[in-house]
Image 1 (cartoon, helix red, strand yellow):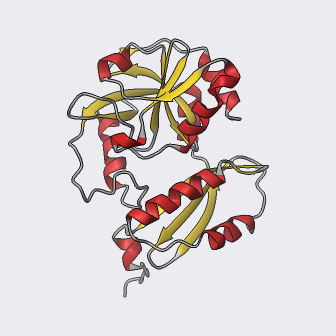
Image 2 (cartoon, rainbow, N blue to C red):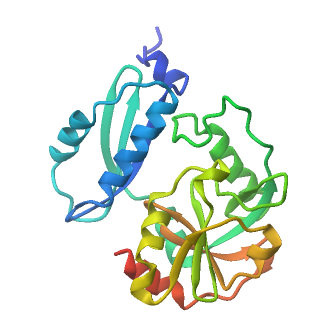
Length: 244
């Protein structure tokens, strides 16, 4: 007789949305921004969301003594709020940086949910595994026209002179909460923040490149398509600006 594991149809087929929040000892960081994106993602799937219930579940969590991963998972049938340790591999990426390989991606069809943070993350993780099999750590998707888009689980941020840039949501990428917060705080370190597109060749000439996400904060790109990049003195400054 085999064990029976009860999995809802929504969970089985990835019919839901989620957010990963950096849970700090003083509380969840950028919770409002994450809940706003969760609502946008849910809207793209015609999925009902009860923000008050989500906030109540988060508020009921016991405090943590070390930064952790808070995940909010809303399916068509249920709401889950979980807390787990941040993986050591994620902390290593923040500390040591990442080697990134670029790969083309086709334009999404009209029904695509690519701009929503859905539970269907299998292709995203497969993309990272492909990059790792080729000797990299992560992947950068590039549009058919040659423009840098995003990583499988991260936004792209780059420094050119005194300007910090990231890819606009209008390009079909998932709006990044960490990247948006960084750009909004850029003036505090005498930088300007803005959204714009960049070709892959232009990105390669940037003063620094990072992959931004909630748990990593910023992971500096130390090589792009096999070409090594010097470590930037801005990395610790920007991590400190974000409180990592």
